[in-house]
Image 1 (tube, rainbow, N blue to C red):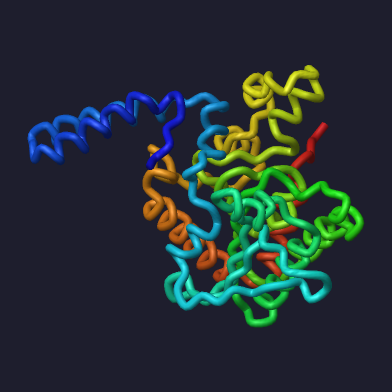
Image 2: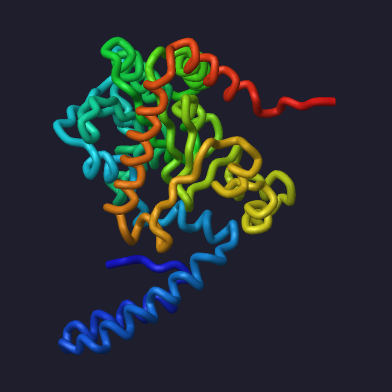
Amino acid sequence: MATYLDFEHKIKFIQEDIISAQVRHDYTAVDEQTVRLNKEVEKTFSNLSDFQKLQLARHIDRPYALDYINIIMKDKYEIHGDRHFRDDAAIICYMGYIGDEKVMVIGEQKGRGTKNKLKRNFGMPHPEGYRKALRAAKMAEKFGMPILMLVDTPGAYPGLGAEERNQSEAIARNLIELAEIDTPTVSIVIGEGGSGGALAIGVADRFAMMRYSVFSVISPEGCSAILWNDPKKSEAATNAMKITSGDLKELGLIDDIINEPLIGAHREKEKAANAISEYFLAQVKDLRAMSKDERMDARYKKLTAPGAFKE
């Protein structure tokens, strides 16, 4: 059963009317309600607040990395383990094809249902997860495969075990290695991009965000707890933090916004997946047209540009 947010209630009622008309075989009513639905979707989703976009980024039905991988990849094979400690299920790595392109896909996976969420650690990777991601990236470099990274995490896991196994070093190592890796790389925030946990697979030639995704140094709840000692002020924090794709594009911190369906990726998963696939293949084509020196120089300038200023 579909889950609707507070601001989607009118859409829910119209969709229920459409289903009822279909059961009655009243196709005139179906057509009328469909027109009404399209108008309501346009009205609702063209005027979303930043907090509403955050709700969409965290929507329970929103596609996760594995959903996209299953739609856009063929002949895929999963890579497990970091060859040091264990296999972290919060990071998934697949080698296979997108279109005719042999690729490596690295993603953060949150999981659905209590059992799966625990298995995936709610999408919060341990150090071994990031080391597995780096191992997969190095394999892609060795065989000349472009890399697609799908970012979707509240943040890196802050537990005692993760700190004992050097969480900060694992993230820092990924930042260094991915900045220097010799193969085209594309990173896309598909839901929630939280802090260093997102940055660890966010360093790439092209960095993009889905229309209703967010990217931030801290969660709005954490921000409001620190600034106002009140986590309930997360809506005010969301508006102040500028974490939506539109804000970050305007600030020049991301390269592109991928236009997932207006009604949200959770309602039209196939279209959202196709948008990711088309964007990735187009960027790989552009990057391959550049020489290695041109590509590495462009990557260096992009990564060092934030925070630069002129007097």
